[in-house]
Amino acid sequence: MLSPTRSIPGLVWAYYVDPAGGTAIRLEPDGELPSFADGNGFLWLHLNLVDTRVSAFLDDFPGLSAEAHTALTTHETHAAVTVDEQLAFGTLVDFQREFDAETRDIGWLHFALSDRFIITSRLQPIRSIDRVRAALEKNPGKCGNPMQLFEMLVAEFQRGLIKVVMEMTEELNAIEDIVYDSELRDERRQLASVRRVVVRLYRHLRTLLSLMRRAAASDEEDMPFGFDEVARRLCARLESVDHDVHALQERARLLHEEIDSKLSSETNRHLYILSLMTAFLLPASLVTGFFGMNTTGLPFADGLHGTLSAFGFIAFSVFLSWLVLRRAGIL
Image 1 (cartoon, rainbow, N blue to C red):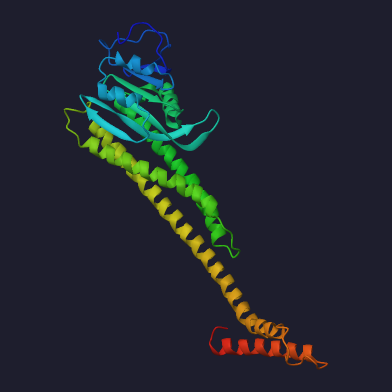
Image 2: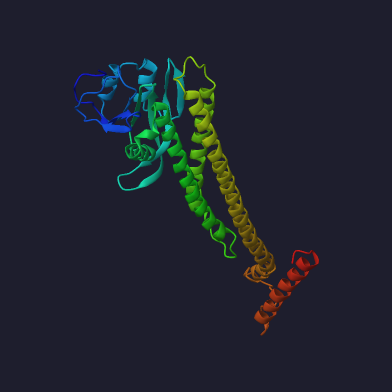
């Protein structure tokens, strides 16, 4: 037996999959884990790392190396894929899931697998893992071994990523319609939220893709049987969506530059108008400043039409300013 009959700490679910019989039996939390001495089945344990006893439970799990144990219980938030001692283990990037909705928040799924078991663990609920579980219950024959289950997990993440890309494409379409409309509106705040998600996805996706390529090129003696073929297929899947995310990132960047350009043009236009107003009013300000000095001997101080004459000087100075700007080609 893998473990004596006792409650499994942090257990979200456990399945014993028998591909030959086409069955996926869900095990009870306090039930007895099956023996791998006979049969061609494999075990899938999914654990919640919120329970601090998970680490002690995995200490006694047969066939699990110290490095794989660390990978399953770590709280680090970066992708990792390692093959060693006929084991594959690491951390996959995915989307978090709330109780009643899917989110775009990045989540982390830790895994370790051999030819007889696959163990997954997480802190927050993950979007892809529930869909893979539903697919396993619906058609257990699809998972002939833990490698295929691992491939389903990454493929489901890719499908979820495509869905997010399509949603963000629609958001960018709406922002683009506003940006290129005749009426100027600042959509930088809405665009910033889209760019933040795209940049994070692109960074983690590129990292995961590089790790998959490196794992596929590892020594065959270190990797579980069939892992190299699975890794190559997953690389092809991730490369296809990588191009889409990159194109989305470039489109968001160009839209941000277009918004900045239009806002800069509008600001320059306002500054141009203010500069013209300043140029027109500066001579008038000099005239009013001159007649407002309250000193003796000012022109028109004793006449009946002094104020009218001063207004005439103001009008003449504004006309002179307009004439100078016109001849200079500014107007």
